[in-house]
Structure formats: structure tokens, C-alpha cells
Picture 1 (tube, rainbow, N blue to C red):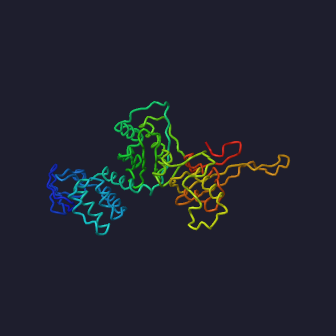
Picture 2: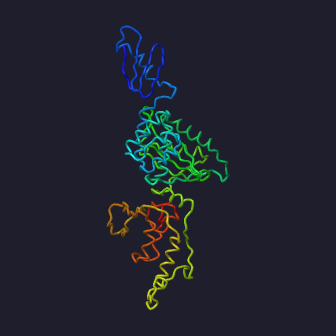
Picture 3: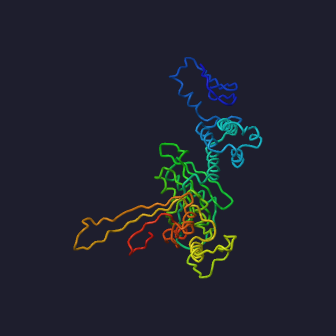
Length: 401
């Protein structure tokens, strides 16, 4: 009795009386006993369905093949070769066989075939996904978290120890996870975690991404839609990095580099640096070639420029897409009049949105659309490293602690 089964490799193996013989695309399974029927095949199938090791490697899992195919399809066609080279899983000779000028669907199929030859697993597929998300990191929403130590002592950072502790903490609570690390030149460690459940395999299409700069207290997280796993992720981070606590900073953006610029103070900005001297390098008269034209509001423009530079600095601004302000206050009335029966607070939400919010705010006063200086609520975003605010009663700080 025999069954015809598709297989991409030509093999001849024997195992407990079962013989697999194949040509190029078909495998025949021969069962050497009389009266064989589907009722007495479970033992045979149990051996057949186990992964076989062939001279060219093991058969690649279908879910891995599909995930690699979809990852390649997300890439711009003129960048596929560059990303595959960064991946380093396919040899240069294999890359030479690919036609990068055909449709992306055909390219993805050919890449999958080469990955089958190299017996790619989920570890390699996850590494390719990290490379894509590192290049297109702005497609994700990132949140900043800050960790705290119990003391000020400096400790030597051991990447191997960090990985071991991180994996150990997560897998002690959940076995079905895929954890992948990749290190980059700027001391950034990219971590990808695909979450499963006690009874389901990890969902590779809804992973969490973590970017941690060693020997700094800041972590940048693009969380999975599976929010229930976020506490476990944070626990693993503080255990692996030897911190005692972690909190969200209320600072979010699609631009990961801009978030780093804000928390690492890598941008040009001055605070409380008022100087009555004219600002160097800016002159109203230089804007006009004809000196017969006199600016009546020259001093006003110079004042606006000076105040704007004091608030935002002279360099480019970090890129944030929004700032959100939540008002939480009480209406005031004479207790004798008893106008308000219910003592409930008044709540209001105001959200400023722009493709480049800080540059937009910086341009308001020079364009005459707002008075200078702008409200501290708008100019303190980078100084306080947050774009989520709560405005409360006057007796409290206008920004939540």
C-alpha cells in the first residue's frame, strides 16, 4: 500500500520498516505489511509526521515559509536585495540567482525556495523581521519607559547575561514565546517577542518590539496588540538589566530617533536663557535688498525671534505627531447658592496633531498666528520629555507628576 505526498527534496530513507522513495516532486510511502488500511496506520503516520533530517537539512515549516514570504512582500522592491544582504542567511551565490526586477510575489516565492534549501527556522524568520522593522521603525508607535535603580552604583553590562535573564524571566511564566535579539552599532539591543498562550503557539504577526540602550535607564517599546503581556515584558526588562522599577514616561511617537533625541538630550534647545542682547545671525534688514524700505515693526520681529529661539532653540526640532492635554477641574460657586448639586469635575480633552508638531508650534509666532512667547504648556514638551499632560486645579501643578 502506498500514498503519494509532495516533497521538495529527493530522499531515500528507511525507518522501522517504512520506506520513503521520491523523484523530484513526489514521495511514495510504502507500508510493508499485509492488510494495511487507514485503521491501522496511526503508528506509521506518527513516524512519518516527525521531522526528518535529510542530507540537505530538514523540511522548513509551512508557517515559517509563509512568514518569510509576507515579510519580503512588505519590502520595497528596490530594497529587497539590500535587506537580504543585511540578513546574511542566504549566500551571495544564492542572491545572484534571484531576479529582483520581477514582480514582488515571484521574488518572495524564490526567496522562500532558497530558505527551504538552507532549512530556515523561525529564528531566522524573526531576524529578517527585525531588520525590516529597524529600517522602517517609523511605521510603529513607540512609547518611552524609564527604569530606576536602588543605588547609584555603576555596573558592568554583560549582553550574554542580559539575554539569559530576559529569556528566563519570560519563559518561567510562559513557555510558548519566540524571543529574538539583534545588536546594533549604537549600543542598541533590539528585542522581538512573539507571544503565545499555554495552549497556542506564538503569534508571529503580533509581536512586541523593544529597543534598549545598554547602561541607560531608557527603554523604547512598541507593544503588541496583546496588551496583557506588557507587565511580563516590563518585569523581564528590569530583571535582566538589574533595575528595581519601571514606569511609562507619557512620551510617544512614530519617530524612534526623535524620542531618543529627547530623552538623551541630543537636540539644540535653551531654557530660561533670556538675554536682552539682539540675537546674533538674524537681521530684519538683511531680508530686503532695497534699503529704502523701512520696517516699522523691526523691534517686534526681533523680539519674536529671540523669544522663539529661547523656547525652541536654533536647531531642528524632534519629530512628534501630537500632544494631548486632559483638563480635570471643578466648577466654583457660592456654597450658599448651591447652584451645583453634583460635585463632579469638569473634564475636557484637547489634542494638537501635525506631521511635525514642534516645528509647527515654532512657526506660529513668526507667522503672526500666535503671540510670543507661546504658553509653557506647548513649549515644555521636550523639556519635560512628555506629550501627554493632565491640567488640574491651581493649587496643584498644571502638569501631572
